[in-house]
Image (cartoon, rainbow, N blue to C red):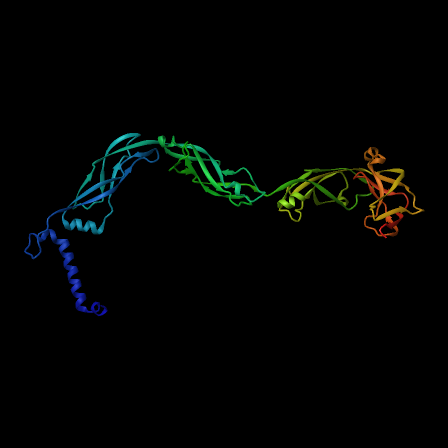
Length: 413
């Protein structure tokens, strides 16, 4: 086969027959008047089925609600012209010019253009029934349908969706627009464990819930669906560091807010009772003031809200009050461990309380206690620091020794 195509005589013969066919196609109309071995060729026809019908109208004011979609076009002429048309397929158009027509039903003449002038054109039908309706625009609030909300990760909570923009516009013919009832978007919440934010297509529905083939402006809206992890509101414990300037005492400390919301795994949240780690440096306070402090995220938590709290610190001039005959208690006894004060250790001590005048006046002897803690001690003769439980903003100091002598006995021996 390759040798055949490489033959010069074979190529020449093929070229001759192609040239002869083209000559006959172009000149066949004249062949009947000339002596030839080819037969005379007469006129013929060719029919185009389902030719698209274009309707030109004022699209800014009207919508086309009725018009035939296609028509039939019959072309008549010489076979050469028809063959040329079939081979070249020139650009043509069959249309109705309704640009000057107003709202309503009309019977308009069907026109055409772009066909070769050598051909006769017959369009069936010759007229078209069309209807124009005034365009109207209505605004619809976007509804968000959340799908698979029961499949959200365990312990997580789905919040109220936020849509931007809130409303979309729908523009269509007055009759069609009257069918529109709602605009919706759909968000799949399956396995969601964090806030979802994305763009979603808008769907238009009628009052029966059937989707309509209508576009909205815009076609897509942004939807944000808050998904929050397990959380709990807990009080904040302030850790005081440093010392106040000499002569000052804390009157009151107020937190705004007093509680924060901690987010994290369910097992962690269930065991959480308060939040620690917020430190107040007393050495930086010289007068009543408000300080903004960062709230740390504890280990095991995801986040804390708010991230900052305000601490209102009220200070006043420090006063002192002598307290005599304060009983000295022993704390931390157990069935195995007992203790008693040494013979030379007074069971009652004298204490000086330091605070503002108002705080000292409010305090009674039942509001505080002095003690030594043996819970972490072993048997033997001990000298342990005297500690105090009392109002948070009052400090206590024993007038004599800051330690107490006692004997601890191990009962299990």
